[in-house]
Length: 355
Image (cartoon, rainbow, N blue to C red; front, top):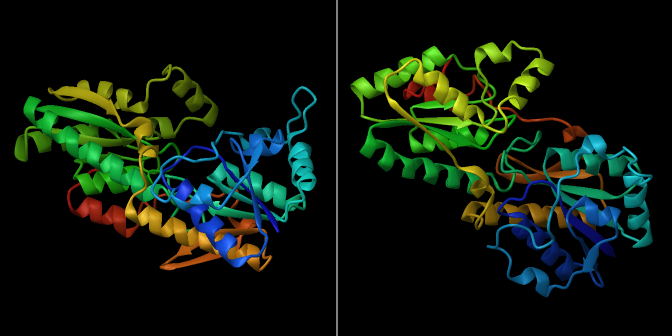
């Protein structure tokens, strides 16, 4: 049996741990199995850039961040676009057939999973595993990388507090989360942020200002605002999509956190600073939970291959690692439940969402 594997999209801490779980299970349970590792994501599949893996490649990578195969972003919306005469889908199918693969395993986020589903519908045997620090994949309670990224964001928010307190400042901290705010919500609660701004809950800057004023007057000499990179004001939420995209483009690369700080400066008399956690949220070693759950995800992927049960997406539902049809999750996002228990608990403990 010959299995292809690739890592696609933004990297995260537990890609190697997941591949290790999959590979070691296959090596130890299938006679004469061969694993082909495609380099730099779907580009490796397109351009026949790969390496024949050995068991030793996987033994000691459980706690290693990043991906030993490399990754790249290949937007789904451009997968079927023929550029300079190059048909990307045809090329991927040809590589699959040329190497006589029995299955292709894709570790990726939402866009990568849409591409995996497309290849499955094109007749390839595909298994997909849930990678994204954003934890926004539909159909699974958890995606590997989320715990590690949330821990990094929480530590960053914690560490900002000492300088904020020393200088009596208000800090607006940008946290990753363009379309969904799971990291910002969890890290904000864990670090005791005063305000959490999410893409799912449009904010009113006057409400934010009122909360900050109350915090500075009654609780402490500083305040922390955890701001997801996709946070949006109530006014902007009413704009047409085209107009909003134009407004974002006009920021010239500055994040919404700076806009929040500028607006807040007009409402309160306090020293305000902006700080961005950035790509550190994807970096470093996976935490213990990510190592454990990623191993389980990899093992389940191997089980599906051994059963020749293709076109499936490995998921966590409750405490059980299982699988669902790939076509059920492709193209869907799991948003923060704005009326759910987590958000309600945050509100009850005094955190404002600026609404």
